[in-house]
Picture 1 (cartoon, rainbow, N blue to C red):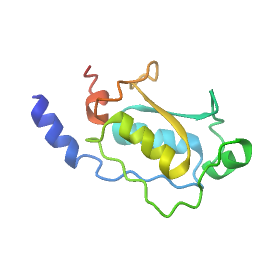
Picture 2: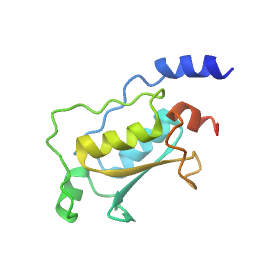
Picture 3: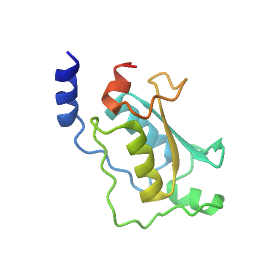
Picture 4: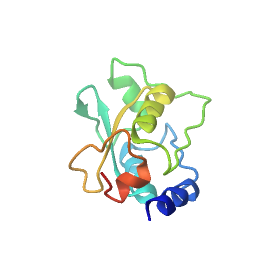
Length: 121
C-alpha cells in the first residue's frame, strides 16, 4: 500500500501557494486542509503571531523576510518535509516546522508530507 500512496502523493495537492499578504493563520489552515499536517511559523525561537501577514512579520523580525520574491512557492504531498521547510526559508526567509496532524511533534525531515499526514514513521 505504501507504493500506491507514494504514487498518489505525486498527484494530490499538486500546487499549494503562499501569498505574502495572507495572514499566517490562513496559510497554516490552508496547509492543514491541503496536506493534513500542521504548519508552524516562527519569529526567532517563538511562534509568530497568527494574526500577522508575512509582510507584517518582516517589520517585526531581524531576519529579512522576502515579501517580493518572484519565485513561486509550490508544494506537493510527494515532497520531503525538510525540503519544504528549506523552500519556505529560501523563498520567504521564514522558519517553519511541519508537525504531525495534531500539531504536537515535528515530523522526520526525511518523510514526505503525504507520509507524515498518514502517520508513517
